[in-house]
Picture (cartoon, helix red, strand yellow):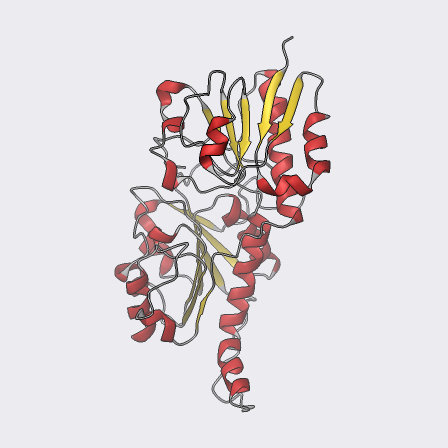
Length: 341
């Protein structure tokens, strides 16, 4: 059997030889090479005779890709590159993502943000800066017994659901296919809700407002598609309880940030935490009203830590997919131009 040539260009692997060894040790039928690449053109120029590419920098062109059959990304969101040549279905290149590798860290961010908002920690921090110790302006809410609505019950949403369920919260889930409960992604022990058993009720896309009306907390983690752009806007905030909190870790353009500013200013919701905006990776403009919003946390796209655990889980994904590839089985986390993710 001719060896399958695998090229890894993920920059962080330069200091993680043990992960490259884990890939190579999978099978004697693999030939694994590493080339540091922080540029998509460098990646593209290195593709001659490569069958499998594991990369953080997708190729700028396919001129040298004479053998390329599969690209494994070391990240999840692909909306900004969906029209790149390697996504052309006529080329027959399989594209797989790192979906699930950062589910744990993003879910922890969501639970931390929910606790921070409901306990009024942002208000107390401002008091601290003013050397004031006062609890009279706080209602000190709990997570226990409250209802969480998860918009997008994928890898992240399922882990958010699991952590929230451990806090004795009632889980509601909105899914593109509400009758499809089983997870089709990579599974790790004690992570997520692989069989989809935690939500007390599932809602379809046309039932979003119905779900929002029941929620004390809402977490949005949907990918960006034509159907989800500006999914959360004025009408959605108006459908929430005035006492509800909103946490956004989905793609930036799924949230109308000006609508969020209006909802906070007008008291349509009680607070929010947002990790990704449509301007990402750039900051909001200095004039944006969210900078001055009350009970609002703004973070710079850090919920999904690219730490040691993340890269080990990314390695778990590519190793499992390489086993499947060598066996001729379907790969996990396949992304397509039609689906948008």
